[in-house]
Amino acid sequence: MNHSITEVSKFALVLALLTAGACHAKQASDDRTEAKLALPPVPAGAQRVLATADGFQPSRVDLKRGTTLLFRRTTNDTCATAVVFPDMKIEKDLPLKTDVAIRLPDSARGELVFQCGMGMYRSKVVVVD
Image 1 (tube, rainbow, N blue to C red):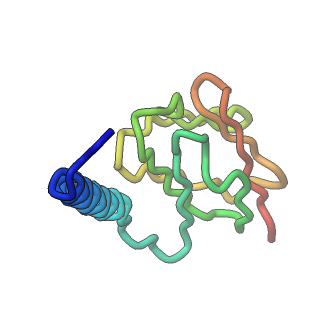
Image 2 (image 1 turned 45 degrees about the vertical axis):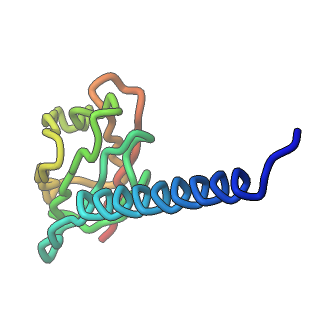
């Protein structure tokens, strides 16, 4: 192959412009993602659990009796569209990007399992005094 300097320069310029455009697009995408995940503050005496594509985050929550948990589904790419506390017979839908409050009763003790509606994602609350 015998390319002139002009052809190589044009190719290098096009490559540089495409790379710069891709970096700019990625940065803009990252900015939008961060803005989407900017969550409102958690009220005093509450704790937030996120329903993500990988399940519930955090997978274990230590808290005191009577605490309110705020569940928020962050994606449509999950089966965690509801949260279920089987032992307490609590089930709540998790609308996308909306906080859903569940207050644990004062009688709650020990480990309480919570899961998605299908039971594929499981996590637990450990009630401490």
